[in-house]
Image (cartoon, rainbow, N blue to C red):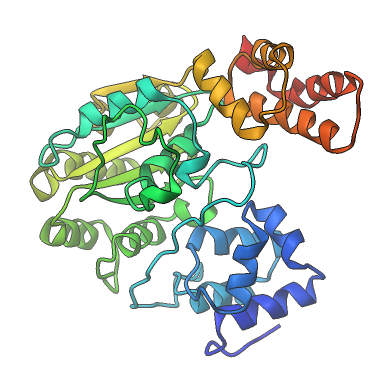
Length: 375
């Protein structure tokens, strides 16, 4: 289907959803947002959704390359066809205050849905206490251990009104917030992030910096060095996928090291996540680089403490008995992903009026694929 580029994002989205027999609830569930978000896009209350959401829509609706690029363009995002250029800045949409609990299997995006990790957050604060000399952090954890949720918390916690946070937040920071910081989030699992030009231009757009017509390493570095005037952190999720991208070669990673050491008088920091030590991943992909030597802080994600786990359980329901709470803690090992699944199963049983313990067996079946977390 060919549509005129002047069509708004909302109109194009509505047409594509109609063509693919998707309603707001179905699309929202598939891409991990609230149905009200989809309705706001369609009604044009929000005209520039986050580009990663647009990419998820394209993949979910299985749009053609041309239709996908038109949808990206209409949202103010860079199209995947590198021959097309845009030069407008984008005001990115903040996550809305959640109207429901975090969905099992989907990383949290709103800080109010993020629980625990107090010790990890204290370490992050130490690395960022000197905004003119930001230190770099590597976060290591198994799949489903909460790496993406942690990055999203760091990205948004300083932008969300205090009234939309929980009373005890931001935990571990003693009322300190990276107030003047700005963040760019890179998900290396997205195909668009495997190409240097689309990756670098995406970072500049998130920082509301001008995107050069030829956004190569030289021009990207020049823009950052000349125009960064506040502490800036680039959050790189699943860097192992980035190392598998053939176009992100040794020269690319060496340039990232130079930026991390010298850019903007120390105001640029990196936080990367991986499921195993980054040096090992780089070696396995034959892309060993000095870039991975700049990470002076390595944090290994562990389960929540029992107190943190109880806080997460209580956010699902206050109707659980002490015995049920203890069962949830013991069988989840206090891992957030497992807790969410088991709590979801318990809430489903309560809402269905079930009075047996069958929910426990069902919950244990649902967490079977992720029991490696308990090893």
